[in-house]
Image 1 (cartoon, rainbow, N blue to C red):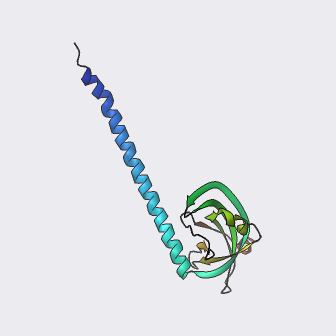
Image 2: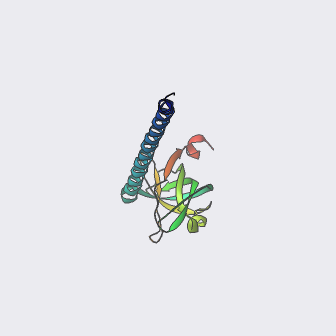
Image 3: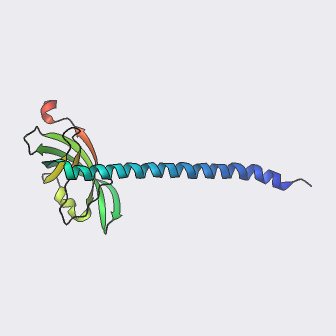
Length: 154
């Protein structure tokens, strides 16, 4: 009679190895995502505390369709195109900002509205200032600098 356990292990061993490998890769990716999110949150908190104040005109708002829940509210992940006007009289610049906005406050970020922001003059990263009553969420704040219309000749 043939030994059946020998053939079963030839199937089970690679399957178990594949499952362990997949689990390790998933854990490493999640750890990296959390580290990136933590760096963004710390950077946003530092910019809110030490950044240069400015006013930003919302040129466009587009909802990505993504939602996050936390702190008792639901957040819409939205892409904002902002024209930042520094208070100190520096030249205005444009940025694309992907940020989380509380669902009840989405209308306050519509095109044509003016928002208070803080920015880093060197890197020109922008963080939206929130009202004192609004919950804060900085996990998805990403800034991409756009060339200003004056520089491109528009």
